[in-house]
Figure 1 (cartoon, one colour):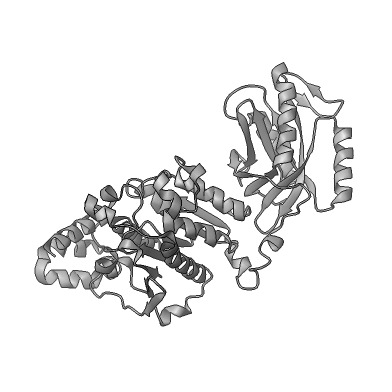
Figure 2 (cartoon, rainbow, N blue to C red; figure 1 turned 120 degrees about the horizontal axis):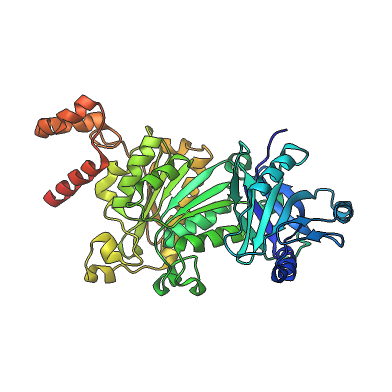
Length: 457
């Protein structure tokens, strides 16, 4: 039988409270406990929703190292639940280990879960609970080891029946849901614009969003961000994850609280498994790095940035081998900055210049929404617009230009041969080694080249 691996678990707060009450009853006695989780499986997302809890029953047997439930009681309760809603099924087992530490399963739990998944319930998983918390676990596709399943607690009435069809009812006719649910989008930079993009892209029905940023939320961010004053001090990745999941619980959200330039290997791995990249940091150095990796991995990218004082912004969609890349427009894009926290350090500008970086979130959100729309079009394969324009310039208020730009013939990133030919005329010895190796110089050398060029300018 084919193994089914749930990608996410949704558990209602009321059910979680029932499980915690069972744990509070048996943990002080040093006894294991258990039970069963019943609910729905949402397709095509493979998201399991836990709506009911069946406790161990009156004849359950508990010891400090084992638990045996009342199977007759459990069968009766499952039958009663399914009589009310035939879509519900037995999803998982709940195990209580009455000790401290990370709530994780044992080797015995592994063999037991393998047997169940090989039998009549290939979608099965387990919930582990102890004094320090709870977690959900499944086996990998080979069935050899445990993998943790992401989860989300739902704070809404149990009688509220949720489904992707109902949630996305108002957008299903204007989006390609069967396409979007299979797609992954990575968003690098979760400031004023990035937080908007993360929220509104999640409302399209996209399957997975990867959030990357290394900043914590501060008071000055509150009036220009989807986060609230209660979020001060929290990582922006966690804030945006909560915002995304609060609007669409069927989205799978991954967070990476990392510095894009210091964790280049991790970032390259993220981009490689993404169908679309959104570069919303506004940092030209970060964008140039992302540009090289995205082109190498052939991942379409949408770059967005805000001009000083939120006087406007730009959106640059890049489809590898079809459009100009970020580096083709380096002289234009490097002048756009999105400034929030530590701007002087991040963008090498003076304090006087920093004070000039004022702008209403309203004015920042408009180009951010435009970038979201472009991202949605690209990830759905709707790239016909690139024949007419591939660069948007927004001028506050309400003025927009759609421009058709060509790839730069001497771009070192997306047109190495042309760049090498140009450079040969002035720096022939410096490119001889690159030509012999048949590949462009490293991105570190490219960055040095641009640094020297900018100093000359």
